[in-house]
Structures are given as C-alpha cells and as structure tokens.
Image: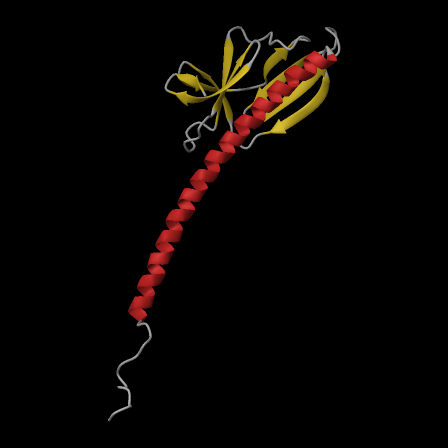
Length: 171
C-alpha cells in the first residue's frame, strides 16, 4: 500500500497534552499576577511618600512666599493644609486637603501610634514650630517592601527614608 497513510497515526494533540499545557500556562499567569500586585502596592506606597514630601515642601514654600503661617493637620487617611492670616485667626483658610490611599502613623522608637488631628505649625519663614526635634510619619507599614515608607519632619526640612527596626533610615 504505497502512498497511503496509516489511519492510526495522527498529527494533533491528545486531550491530556492540552490539559497539561493549559495548567502550565495558568500556573505561570498566577505567579505573574501575584508579583504584579506586590509591585503595584510597593509603587503606590512610594508614590504616596513622594506626594506627601512634595506637599509638605510646597506648604513651607507657600508660607515663605505669602509670609503667612500655615498648619498641616495629620489624620490616618487625610492631610489638611490651612493658611492663617494673623495670630487672632482661629480657623484659617483651607489651602487644600489630600486623601490618602494608605494609612499614615506616627513612628517613634519602634512604636507606631495613630494620628488624630495632629498639627504641624509652619511659621511665615517656613520653619516648623510644633516639632521639637523631629516627627516620623510612617506610610503603609507592613505592606510590601517599598524602597521608602517614612518621612521625617524636622524644623527646617523633610527627609524620606525606610523604616528599619527602631528608626527611619534616610535614603
């Protein structure tokens, strides 16, 4: 029977081979998805830290430019910024509010505590009056491994760092 093909030899895939390939592809996709969500959380924490640094720096600059006192009020999921025209101005003028995706906490000597209407006062020269030495703000502690997840507010500057044990190590 020259020229005739054997009926039993086929060139397709068996059902078992197809199921194994689908299983392998789904396992690789599951691993990639888990890593993606981890990277996304890490990126979002770092973005919030950068945004907070930018906001605090901008408020210091506004205080210098307008020659008016400003206050930053910290809460776990929101930061509020206000401008004060004089010492007798009790309520102030809202500058802007920032809602936060990740909870911020006060960090001191390895201990975390909640913010509840904690105020940072900035005078008309851009210096912080209410922070004696420094205040450490932790962002999303325990979520992922971001390159930086804390801010240290000093009387004249703000530093960014990563919580390592009992301190925020500057980056």
